[in-house]
Length: 60
View: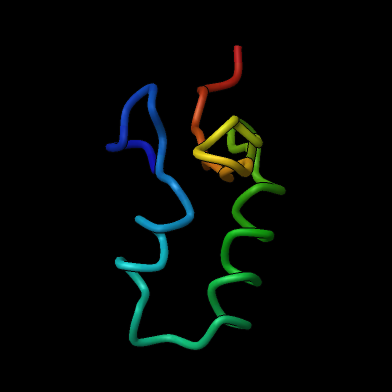
């Protein structure tokens, strides 16, 4: 996430990174990550529906 820069990772990119894992694993991973300081999941407008983007912004 830190290496993704200001655009973060989309849900599709997270899927591609962890495609060998099941959906429950990916969901748990992103949920736990978003609990850490500086990490967040935001909804952004997409083509007809919102997309989830995972971002890192260092605290302070």
